[in-house]
Image 1: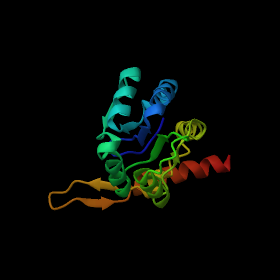
Image 2 (image 1 turned 120 degrees about the horizontal axis):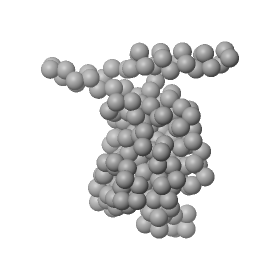
Image 3 (image 1 turned 30 degrees about the vertical axis):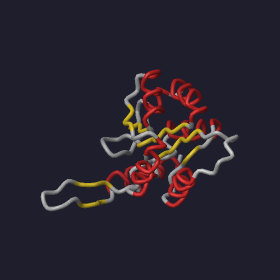
Image 4 (image 1 turned 45 degrees about the vertical axis):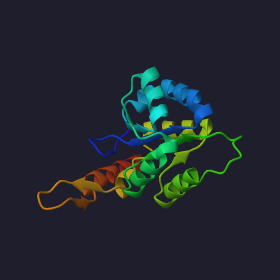
Length: 172
């Protein structure tokens, strides 16, 4: 089951689809709903509504992409709160999109795996199921509530557990 996340032990996955790829995203989510059920899901407004309607998965919705939704996702990435981005874009769209470029650039900067097509998305989602993305726990800080001020603290206990699990697997 996918681990990590802002709340509990779930990975934070963002799902975005351009207009003519929304149906593909819905089909993807239907096919992999059992894996996605163990994740904290985020999406831009229309994509999120479509996914929630066809899968009954809980999806936290940002604004529509054209009204700042992608900027909201970028902000979450800047805080290193996102573990995986699946962004189905239209390869035939010749118009360069600055928001899209900035989103992928931030994923590169924070080492956040992202997919822009179905083949890569399937590889990443299967890797998520196997635990291949557990390393995200090592690089993602956790906010700890404090009466004085929020403190950012690395998950050392969970990080050690992930490393020990990998060492045991390598020894076998």
